[in-house]
Image 1 (cartoon, rainbow, N blue to C red):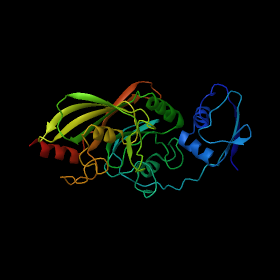
Image 2 (cartoon, one colour; image 1 turned 180 degrees about the vertical axis):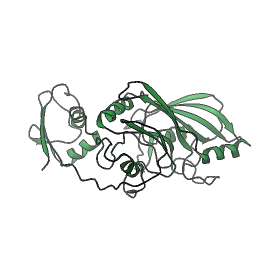
Image 3 (tube, rainbow, N blue to C red; image 1 turned 45 degrees about the vertical axis):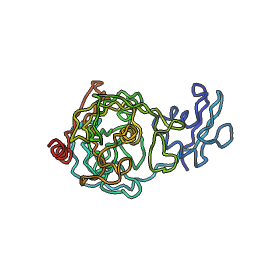
Image 4 (cartoon, rainbow, N blue to C red; image 1 turned 60 degrees about the vertical axis):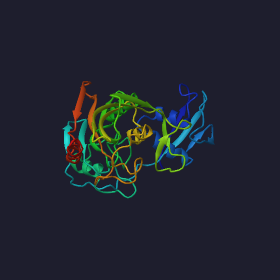
Length: 305
């Protein structure tokens, strides 16, 4: 049996029940609470509700929080490229073809496996047993800087900055087709693809607001461009979807770009180069830069000839 909790709704009136619970239980992610609701473990006024139930002032919410699951993700001695580390956070330069956290088909060799070995028990627990310390992620074939939190206070502090879009995130990418402008922005909502559920797409019906600012660093070989993208929001596959939507898919992206790539690449040419945020303890702004990986520099050399 898990822990039973009860709330009487006041300030959360008008919210969906999953959003209200995320506010009332800040140590739990909204996705985790949605799972509890789906398992019919949330009752409002003695009736089982779904995630989209709208709260009314005076509603009585009751739920049972399941007992914590024993972590079965094993620590592994993995050579992590650490850019910075202290008692609250660790910033890692993620290599290509490395998954951030365990998921179906990837239960070993992930950043989390390496972190469990390196940090022992010093990781935040907010995102559950499969994602300890993980406050944001980048795709398997995207390289670059990612911050991990060592305690729940740091996790909440960084997560709030992500929510407010105050974190600096600059990416370098090589895309198809030259530009005739120096910079621009794409402001288009992103949601699940209406047919292929594994893909994201511009979705004006059910998508969430997504904004990407881009700056052209160099047009290459008459048919490619090296660009910098700065995220205002952080939706899944945001840069890949946005750049494809303006006819500049990422080189090597076999999901959103051409099926055949003229170069021997492992996925999209996308690198999280700059990551900046306010430190959870010192309250000072810190910025980290992950140097461009060798494959990226090598490709630039080829295209600049």
